[in-house]
Amino acid sequence: MTMPTQALLRVLLAEPERDWYGLELCELAGMPSGTVYPILARLEQVGWLESRWEEPETHAGRARPRRRYYRITADGAEQASDAVARAYRARRQQAPAWLPRPGAAGGGS
Image (cartoon, rainbow, N blue to C red; front, side):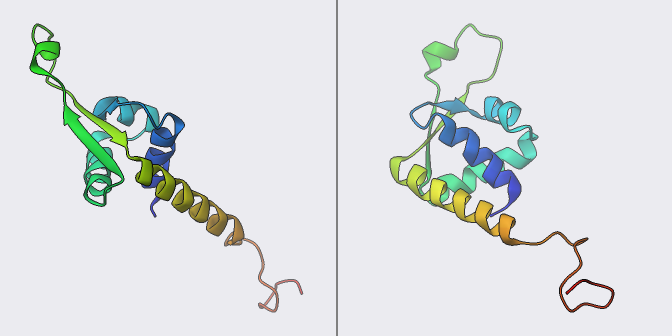
């Protein structure tokens, strides 16, 4: 799982009952739309997210495009939480590249 996907999932998992619109997610995750929207599409394809378009009445009269809202599904929240935790544990177990490896030339024992 990529770091951008993990960052986006953390935002979604912070308030799993909430509907988020795309640019809001970009802001909160600190990533550009060209990164966020493909991730949202993939998460929706696997069933972790569901989306809906803003009602035309809500959008009418505002000087902005119609918003698409995303919400993490109950199953998606459970699976995403597990996946993010596994990714975190895997990162913690990897030694940094600068750390000498035991038995390596010039390294410690």
